[in-house]
Image (cartoon, rainbow, N blue to C red; front, side, top):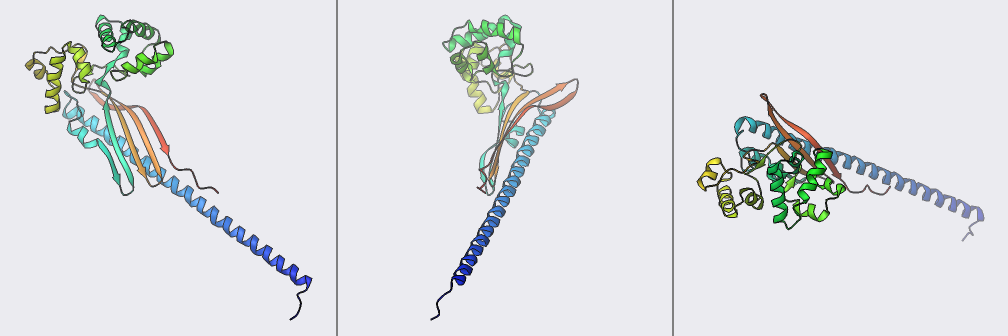
Length: 286
C-alpha cells in the first residue's frame, strides 16, 4: 500500500473546503429563494384580503344608498338591505370572513349638550343618576362642549377632567355623532328606552313588540299608550361597519364610519372614517 503524500493531503483539504463553500452557497440560494417566495405569498394574500374587505365595504355603501329609495321612513337591522350585507363570521376554504353593521344612532349623542338645552341636560342628568353617577357631570360636559365644540369620541372627555369611571359607565349609552341625529327607537337599548319614556313597563312592552316584529312604528307607541319621546325617531343615517377578511397567511380588519345624506334631493353615502389593520405572520428568517 502506497503512503499518502503531504501534497495529496493538502489537495483533499482543498476539495473539502470547496465542497463546503459550494454547499453553503447552495443553502444560501435556497434560503433566499424561499424568503423571496414567502414575501411574494404574503404580499399576494394581503392584496387579496384588502380587495375582499373593500368590496364588502362597497356592498354595504350600496345597500344603504338603495335603502334611501326603498324604505326611507324606517331603519333597522331586520331590513332586507341589512340582511343582505351582515355576515356572521364564516370559515371558508381560503380563510374567514365577516361583516358587522352597527347603528350609531342607538345611543344618546353627547354633542347635543353643546347646545345646553333643558331637554338634553335633563336627560343626561337622569341617565347619570340611573347609573349612580353625579348628575352634575352633565353640566361639566356641557361646559366642555361649549368650548371645544362637537367631539369625535366621548372618550375624549377624559382629557378635560371627566373621570374614567363615569365614562366607562356611560359608554354603553352615549355616542358622539358627526352629524345631527335622533335616537333610533328601532335600535335603542331597553335601559335607555325606559329612561326616555320615564316608564320601564312601557319600554318593556315596546321592546317585546320590536323583538317580535323586527321594528317599531308610531302606531305601536300609540297602541301601548306611549308618547314619542323627545329626541327620538325611527331612522338612522350613521353606521359603523366592521369587516374581517382572511385569506392564506394575511388578515385585514377594516372599520368604517358611514354617513347617509338626503339633502335637497341629493342622496349619498359618505365614508367619513376608514381604518385598515393588516395582520400577517412574521417573514421567515433569511
